[in-house]
Image 1 (spheres, helix red, strand yellow):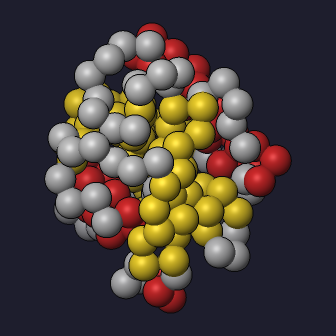
Image 2 (spheres, helix red, strand yellow):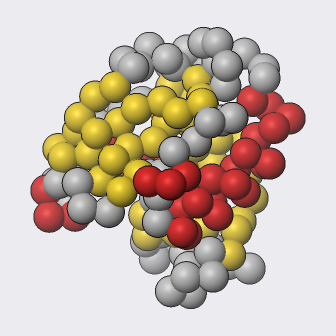
Length: 146
């Protein structure tokens, strides 16, 4: 299964494990995700997408969380657990330069109480995959986020 989409995953360990999500002004709650460009490694694409969509400039991929068939538009997503070395706020808005210049409203969602009803079905399935994929690492400290 060869991925064509990269998805950086940022977790916060401040109290209960939380995942970084955003509200798209037209498409509900989402994960950061974008196309892997020709010749681009999936992990590097994940970091690029994180920078472009959230404004987070410095992050490191710490783990490959596997590939997932989205069963939507022939998309195969490559998930990468990323750490950010600086504290991130509880919420912020980032104005994208691509995607028609939308303002994405970022927030932390508890892994055990995700806003699935606000997500497109493909993001609901992706989040369920990530809850299972991050369960072994979600309780460990190590991220300075949130």
